[in-house]
Length: 230
Image 1 (cartoon, rainbow, N blue to C red):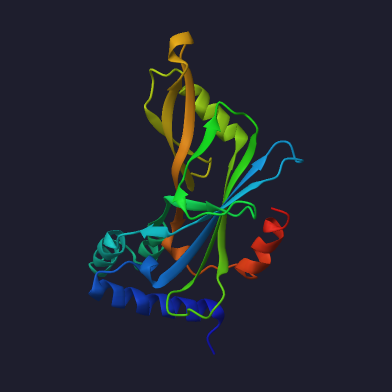
Image 2 (image 1 turned 45 degrees about the horizontal axis):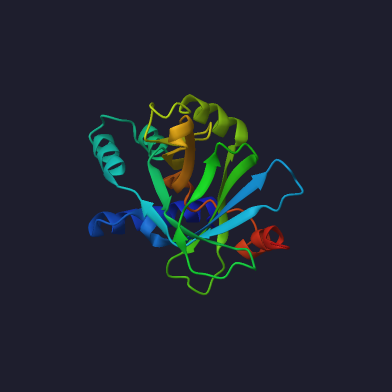
């Protein structure tokens, strides 16, 4: 009998074969949900929790096709090509979100959150969940959690504090798996230039080989405690 890893590998190979014919992305076989949690240094301050309206996966199969073509021509060893496939990245983009605060009633809006010059942010977390696209009655399962710490945020933004140096920037965590896209604004120009940066979108990177590496539990089991008392 096949173990779970073997069955997962067989499923992935069958899907990739079908996707190559249809010119589709492997990530298109999944439905994603994403939550952004902003935690503050003052633990007494309530965390800010947002749910992304829609997660936009972006991935091409060019890397996979080229590697396997070379492997079949003995230009690459097949095993080494399989290992390189793990570096074929899925980009998951978020553009709109909605606050999960119970006292905030409204629809989704463009991501807009000031991250500088405030220095009270401890971490910005991105919780990603997914399920097979055709399994609409199944629960979403945890896929990954990405974190950007305040030290990473502050150290990189201090470089851009001079308003003349940038119109915007991209901040990433040390693992380069989470990216914040920031817009740059100038305040109080008449009294001396003051920089302000606001997050307007974000993106997380995930190797396509991890698209089926779900953790234990469900989205509700993980998020319900985090949403309590919000």
